[in-house]
Length: 296
Image 1 (tube, rainbow, N blue to C red):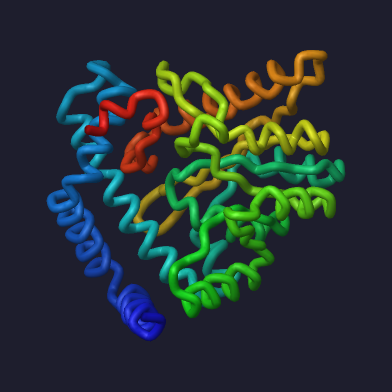
Image 2: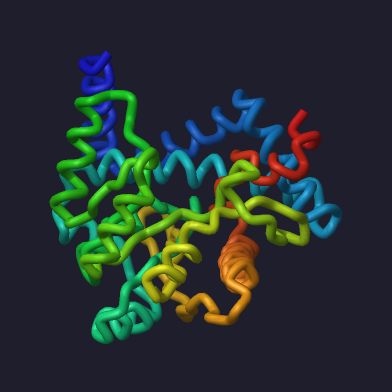
Protein backbone atom coordinates (compact mmCIF):
# COMPACT_ATOMS: atom_id res chain seq x y z
CA UNK A 1 0.00 0.00 0.00
CA UNK A 2 2.89 2.37 0.68
CA UNK A 3 3.77 2.38 -3.03
CA UNK A 4 0.17 3.24 -3.89
CA UNK A 5 0.10 6.12 -1.38
CA UNK A 6 3.43 7.39 -2.70
CA UNK A 7 2.25 7.22 -6.31
CA UNK A 8 -0.97 9.07 -5.52
CA UNK A 9 0.87 11.69 -3.47
CA UNK A 10 3.50 12.27 -6.17
CA UNK A 11 0.86 12.45 -8.91
CA UNK A 12 -1.36 14.90 -7.04
CA UNK A 13 1.61 17.06 -6.05
CA UNK A 14 2.76 17.25 -9.68
CA UNK A 15 -0.77 18.22 -10.70
CA UNK A 16 -1.10 20.86 -7.98
CA UNK A 17 2.31 22.43 -8.60
CA UNK A 18 2.33 22.52 -12.40
CA UNK A 19 -1.32 23.15 -13.28
CA UNK A 20 -1.99 26.84 -14.05
CA UNK A 21 -3.73 28.43 -11.08
CA UNK A 22 -6.90 29.39 -12.93
CA UNK A 23 -7.38 25.80 -14.09
CA UNK A 24 -6.34 24.33 -10.72
CA UNK A 25 -8.86 26.44 -8.80
CA UNK A 26 -11.60 25.34 -11.18
CA UNK A 27 -10.65 21.70 -10.58
CA UNK A 28 -10.60 22.17 -6.79
CA UNK A 29 -13.94 23.98 -6.85
CA UNK A 30 -15.41 21.15 -8.90
CA UNK A 31 -14.01 18.52 -6.52
CA UNK A 32 -15.42 20.31 -3.49
CA UNK A 33 -18.86 20.50 -5.14
CA UNK A 34 -18.73 16.78 -6.02
CA UNK A 35 -17.83 15.96 -2.41
CA UNK A 36 -20.72 18.09 -1.20
CA UNK A 37 -23.08 16.17 -3.49
CA UNK A 38 -21.93 12.60 -2.78
CA UNK A 39 -20.79 12.72 0.86
CA UNK A 40 -24.24 12.39 2.38
CA UNK A 41 -22.95 11.08 5.72
CA UNK A 42 -20.79 14.08 6.63
CA UNK A 43 -23.14 16.57 5.00
CA UNK A 44 -25.84 15.30 7.37
CA UNK A 45 -23.47 15.71 10.34
CA UNK A 46 -22.66 19.27 9.30
CA UNK A 47 -26.34 20.15 8.93
CA UNK A 48 -27.10 18.68 12.37
CA UNK A 49 -24.29 20.76 13.88
CA UNK A 50 -25.50 23.95 12.22
CA UNK A 51 -29.10 23.33 13.27
CA UNK A 52 -27.97 22.89 16.87
CA UNK A 53 -25.51 25.80 16.89
CA UNK A 54 -27.56 28.40 15.01
CA UNK A 55 -31.13 27.05 15.33
CA UNK A 56 -33.23 29.47 13.25
CA UNK A 57 -30.85 32.42 13.60
CA UNK A 58 -29.70 31.84 10.03
CA UNK A 59 -31.68 30.55 7.04
CA UNK A 60 -31.54 27.06 5.55
CA UNK A 61 -29.86 28.50 2.45
CA UNK A 62 -27.17 30.09 4.63
CA UNK A 63 -26.55 26.75 6.33
CA UNK A 64 -26.16 25.01 2.97
CA UNK A 65 -23.75 27.72 1.82
CA UNK A 66 -21.68 27.20 4.98
CA UNK A 67 -21.52 23.45 4.34
CA UNK A 68 -20.45 24.02 0.73
CA UNK A 69 -17.79 26.42 1.96
CA UNK A 70 -16.66 23.84 4.51
CA UNK A 71 -16.04 21.29 1.76
CA UNK A 72 -14.22 23.90 -0.32
CA UNK A 73 -12.00 24.83 2.61
CA UNK A 74 -11.23 21.15 3.21
CA UNK A 75 -10.27 20.52 -0.43
CA UNK A 76 -8.11 23.65 -0.66
CA UNK A 77 -6.44 22.82 2.67
CA UNK A 78 -5.64 19.30 1.46
CA UNK A 79 -4.27 20.63 -1.83
CA UNK A 80 -2.07 23.15 -0.02
CA UNK A 81 -0.94 20.44 2.41
CA UNK A 82 0.25 18.32 -0.53
CA UNK A 83 1.91 21.35 -2.15
CA UNK A 84 3.76 22.20 1.06
CA UNK A 85 5.56 18.85 1.29
CA UNK A 86 8.99 19.86 0.06
CA UNK A 87 8.18 23.58 -0.10
CA UNK A 88 10.88 26.09 0.79
CA UNK A 89 10.60 28.41 3.76
CA UNK A 90 10.12 31.40 1.45
CA UNK A 91 7.29 29.62 -0.36
CA UNK A 92 5.52 29.12 2.97
CA UNK A 93 5.95 32.68 4.22
CA UNK A 94 5.12 34.34 0.89
CA UNK A 95 1.49 33.26 1.23
CA UNK A 96 1.05 34.12 4.91
CA UNK A 97 0.66 37.45 6.69
CA UNK A 98 0.65 37.84 10.47
CA UNK A 99 -1.65 40.00 12.59
CA UNK A 100 -0.80 40.90 16.20
CA UNK A 101 2.33 38.73 16.10
CA UNK A 102 3.82 40.94 18.82
CA UNK A 103 1.42 39.26 21.26
CA UNK A 104 3.46 36.08 20.77
CA UNK A 105 6.92 37.59 20.36
CA UNK A 106 6.52 39.56 23.61
CA UNK A 107 5.86 36.31 25.47
CA UNK A 108 8.88 34.70 23.81
CA UNK A 109 11.07 37.64 24.83
CA UNK A 110 9.78 37.29 28.40
CA UNK A 111 10.96 33.66 28.33
CA UNK A 112 7.46 32.42 29.17
CA UNK A 113 6.30 28.86 28.69
CA UNK A 114 3.75 29.09 25.87
CA UNK A 115 0.76 27.04 24.74
CA UNK A 116 -0.71 28.03 21.37
CA UNK A 117 -4.35 26.99 21.10
CA UNK A 118 -6.16 26.72 17.79
CA UNK A 119 -8.86 24.71 16.02
CA UNK A 120 -9.59 22.80 12.83
CA UNK A 121 -10.20 26.13 11.18
CA UNK A 122 -8.97 27.63 7.94
CA UNK A 123 -5.76 26.06 6.68
CA UNK A 124 -4.79 24.71 10.09
CA UNK A 125 -2.01 22.52 8.67
CA UNK A 126 -0.21 25.63 7.39
CA UNK A 127 -0.48 27.42 10.73
CA UNK A 128 2.28 25.50 12.51
CA UNK A 129 4.71 25.66 9.57
CA UNK A 130 4.39 29.43 9.25
CA UNK A 131 4.68 30.10 12.99
CA UNK A 132 7.71 27.83 13.29
CA UNK A 133 9.45 29.42 10.33
CA UNK A 134 8.94 33.05 11.31
CA UNK A 135 8.44 33.17 15.06
CA UNK A 136 9.38 30.10 17.10
CA UNK A 137 10.03 26.34 16.94
CA UNK A 138 6.92 24.40 17.85
CA UNK A 139 5.74 21.01 19.11
CA UNK A 140 2.26 19.97 17.98
CA UNK A 141 -0.05 17.04 18.64
CA UNK A 142 -1.26 14.96 15.70
CA UNK A 143 -2.13 11.50 14.46
CA UNK A 144 0.29 9.28 12.58
CA UNK A 145 -0.73 8.45 9.02
CA UNK A 146 -1.50 4.87 7.99
CA UNK A 147 1.40 4.86 5.52
CA UNK A 148 4.98 4.67 6.85
CA UNK A 149 6.39 6.26 3.71
CA UNK A 150 3.94 9.18 3.94
CA UNK A 151 4.77 9.61 7.63
CA UNK A 152 8.45 9.92 6.70
CA UNK A 153 7.68 12.57 4.05
CA UNK A 154 5.50 14.49 6.49
CA UNK A 155 8.03 14.27 9.33
CA UNK A 156 10.92 15.36 7.11
CA UNK A 157 9.00 18.40 5.91
CA UNK A 158 7.97 19.46 9.41
CA UNK A 159 11.48 18.97 10.78
CA UNK A 160 12.74 21.32 8.06
CA UNK A 161 10.62 24.02 9.71
CA UNK A 162 11.46 22.83 13.26
CA UNK A 163 7.96 21.52 13.92
CA UNK A 164 7.95 18.47 16.18
CA UNK A 165 4.96 16.16 15.71
CA UNK A 166 3.87 14.48 18.95
CA UNK A 167 1.90 11.28 18.45
CA UNK A 168 -1.57 11.62 19.94
CA UNK A 169 -1.19 8.33 21.82
CA UNK A 170 1.65 9.70 23.96
CA UNK A 171 1.01 13.40 23.53
CA UNK A 172 0.93 14.43 27.19
CA UNK A 173 4.45 13.12 27.84
CA UNK A 174 5.74 14.90 24.74
CA UNK A 175 4.07 18.18 25.68
CA UNK A 176 5.52 17.98 29.19
CA UNK A 177 9.02 17.50 27.78
CA UNK A 178 8.59 20.35 25.30
CA UNK A 179 7.42 22.83 27.94
CA UNK A 180 10.27 21.83 30.25
CA UNK A 181 12.61 22.95 27.43
CA UNK A 182 10.62 26.20 26.99
CA UNK A 183 9.52 24.99 23.57
CA UNK A 184 6.01 26.28 22.69
CA UNK A 185 3.31 23.66 22.29
CA UNK A 186 0.41 23.82 19.82
CA UNK A 187 -2.92 22.19 20.69
CA UNK A 188 -6.15 21.79 18.70
CA UNK A 189 -8.97 22.25 21.21
CA UNK A 190 -12.19 22.06 19.21
CA UNK A 191 -13.10 18.36 18.97
CA UNK A 192 -15.52 16.23 20.97
CA UNK A 193 -14.08 14.14 23.80
CA UNK A 194 -15.23 11.26 25.98
CA UNK A 195 -16.69 11.91 29.44
CA UNK A 196 -13.47 10.95 31.19
CA UNK A 197 -11.31 13.05 28.84
CA UNK A 198 -13.23 16.31 28.69
CA UNK A 199 -14.82 19.07 30.73
CA UNK A 200 -18.41 20.16 30.18
CA UNK A 201 -18.60 23.73 28.86
CA UNK A 202 -20.94 25.93 26.79
CA UNK A 203 -20.25 26.08 23.06
CA UNK A 204 -22.66 27.98 20.80
CA UNK A 205 -25.02 28.01 23.78
CA UNK A 206 -25.07 24.21 24.04
CA UNK A 207 -23.27 21.86 26.41
CA UNK A 208 -20.20 20.15 24.94
CA UNK A 209 -17.16 18.26 26.15
CA UNK A 210 -13.89 20.15 25.72
CA UNK A 211 -10.33 18.98 26.21
CA UNK A 212 -8.71 20.44 29.36
CA UNK A 213 -5.17 19.66 28.13
CA UNK A 214 -4.10 23.26 27.54
CA UNK A 215 -5.48 24.42 30.89
CA UNK A 216 -3.95 21.51 32.83
CA UNK A 217 -0.53 22.07 31.26
CA UNK A 218 -0.74 25.83 31.80
CA UNK A 219 -1.59 25.29 35.46
CA UNK A 220 1.23 22.79 35.98
CA UNK A 221 3.95 24.86 34.29
CA UNK A 222 2.68 28.39 34.96
CA UNK A 223 2.39 28.68 31.20
CA UNK A 224 0.43 31.24 29.23
CA UNK A 225 -2.17 30.29 26.60
CA UNK A 226 -2.31 32.32 23.40
CA UNK A 227 -4.99 31.73 20.74
CA UNK A 228 -3.94 31.73 17.08
CA UNK A 229 -6.17 31.12 14.07
CA UNK A 230 -5.55 31.13 10.33
CA UNK A 231 -8.06 32.43 7.77
CA UNK A 232 -7.94 32.37 3.99
CA UNK A 233 -7.77 35.75 2.30
CA UNK A 234 -8.24 34.26 -1.18
CA UNK A 235 -7.51 30.93 -2.88
CA UNK A 236 -3.81 30.92 -1.98
CA UNK A 237 -3.09 33.58 0.65
CA UNK A 238 -3.72 33.39 4.38
CA UNK A 239 -3.67 35.50 7.53
CA UNK A 240 -2.63 34.22 10.95
CA UNK A 241 -4.11 36.27 13.78
CA UNK A 242 -3.02 36.10 17.41
CA UNK A 243 -5.36 37.02 20.25
CA UNK A 244 -4.71 38.26 23.78
CA UNK A 245 -3.09 35.60 25.92
CA UNK A 246 -4.45 34.45 29.25
CA UNK A 247 -3.46 32.29 32.20
CA UNK A 248 -5.20 29.87 34.51
CA UNK A 249 -6.37 31.57 37.71
CA UNK A 250 -4.60 30.55 40.90
CA UNK A 251 -7.36 30.34 43.51
CA UNK A 252 -7.99 27.69 46.14
CA UNK A 253 -10.55 26.06 43.85
CA UNK A 254 -8.37 24.35 41.23
CA UNK A 255 -11.31 22.72 39.40
CA UNK A 256 -13.05 26.08 39.04
CA UNK A 257 -9.85 27.66 37.72
CA UNK A 258 -9.48 24.93 35.08
CA UNK A 259 -13.16 25.15 34.09
CA UNK A 260 -13.00 28.92 33.61
CA UNK A 261 -9.87 28.58 31.47
CA UNK A 262 -11.41 25.86 29.31
CA UNK A 263 -14.61 27.90 28.89
CA UNK A 264 -12.53 30.87 27.74
CA UNK A 265 -10.90 28.70 25.08
CA UNK A 266 -14.34 27.60 23.86
CA UNK A 267 -15.61 31.20 23.82
CA UNK A 268 -12.68 32.43 21.72
CA UNK A 269 -13.03 29.50 19.31
CA UNK A 270 -16.76 30.20 18.94
CA UNK A 271 -16.09 33.90 18.28
CA UNK A 272 -13.61 33.07 15.51
CA UNK A 273 -15.92 30.49 13.92
CA UNK A 274 -18.82 32.96 13.87
CA UNK A 275 -16.65 35.50 12.05
CA UNK A 276 -16.27 33.12 9.08
CA UNK A 277 -18.20 29.89 9.74
CA UNK A 278 -17.50 28.21 6.39
CA UNK A 279 -13.85 27.73 7.40
CA UNK A 280 -14.54 25.54 10.44
CA UNK A 281 -14.67 21.73 10.21
CA UNK A 282 -18.43 21.26 10.66
CA UNK A 283 -18.18 17.65 9.42
CA UNK A 284 -17.13 16.42 12.88
CA UNK A 285 -19.66 15.28 15.52
CA UNK A 286 -18.72 18.12 17.86
CA UNK A 287 -21.70 17.72 20.21
CA UNK A 288 -21.85 13.90 20.18
CA UNK A 289 -21.17 13.60 23.91
CA UNK A 290 -24.29 15.55 24.90
CA UNK A 291 -26.54 15.46 21.82
CA UNK A 292 -25.81 12.11 20.18
CA UNK A 293 -29.41 11.85 18.97
CA UNK A 294 -29.00 14.69 16.45
CA UNK A 295 -26.62 12.55 14.38
CA UNK A 296 -29.02 9.61 13.94
